[in-house]
Length: 192
Image (cartoon, rainbow, N blue to C red; front, side, top):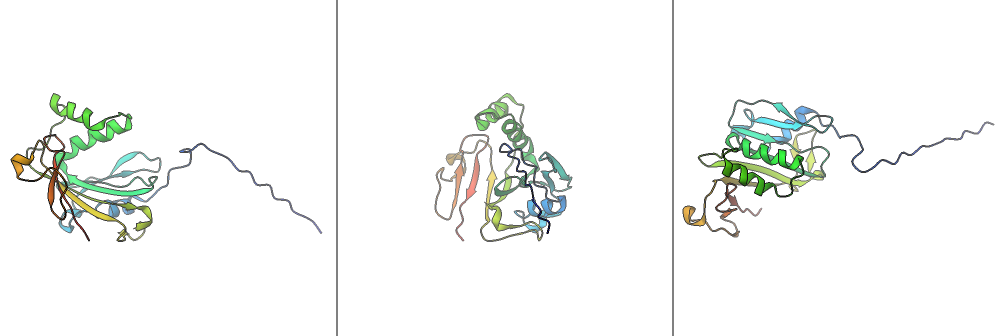
């Protein structure tokens, strides 16, 4: 009788050295547009991630919204869709985060003041879904109730005085976050 000895080799890699999880583009697109009302989904441009974790355009849309899907390597789900007029501000934020700039908002606000980022002249919506990856079924393009919807309307430089909205959270009502800044936006507080 022969005996077989198996040798198992375990490689210890530094954190982050593992290969990027890959999610097919069609699944990324389906999940990225979920925050949007149906009327905007088909025309939205969609940014997502290639197999190396690089942000790429998955679909160039003809509509008024841009959606940013979740990086498959992240432990939390976050899909955000915003009016195309917000793309310069959002792209600047992504670029600053990639460069590991400590205070992204201060840097973007300085760019807005210098005129290198143009903010929308009118209100611009943002729709987002957030929650644990366990609440996502990528193959079906669905999310569970563990994933929460939030939405806001950007109104650069708006204040409580200019809008009549409080600049602190209220229960089940709109309020103005980041009042007086380029990032000022009406938050809608919802309870399910």
